[in-house]
Length: 228
Image (cartoon, rainbow, N blue to C red; front, side, top):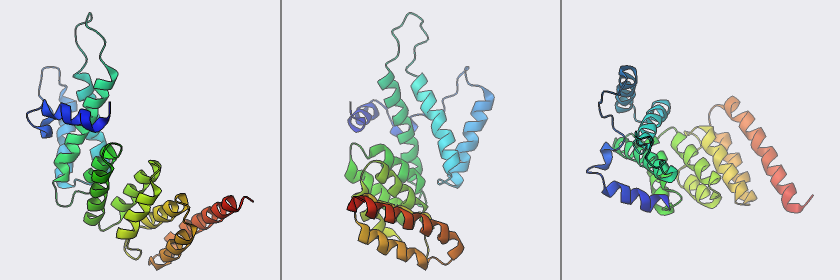
């Protein structure tokens, strides 16, 4: 079953999606886990773009959601793996959605885009674009383009990058992803143009190895195109 329709169905069962995966105190809770989770949540309230804290908390809520589908009765039927996975995805979705409400929160939007890409590409692209607009460093843009490239959507990655990349201000990784997207889309002329724009970044020493890598990648793509 596709993720998005299943997520919507699961979300309708909840009184509030934002509570999915949230800690519910019980006698089985270990104090160390509880303190760790609370600390992660406090860190994300401070900085919703703390990737390590988000991933650590996502793992906790994902595991808890999956375990909620496992019966304590040894005679019960085995848990449905797809149900467990969908519940885990919903828990991470709810966590990301909650944090995305922060006006500076770009990383949760990238995660929401990743989760929704397969079933709602248009919504995913909107989330990636909003994340890129919120993040002055260019990291959100770089990560969003990489996700699109990995999903075999280089044209969409290229469009996102062209619309948001600021060569002088953004991390060179954003430019790198843009050049790679152009290569993936077989737009070699555009790849060369974006490669030249990387020279606008003020720290030449940082850009030099990236330009070397991309120059080789473009040459390889040209050779592959010509069949030599």
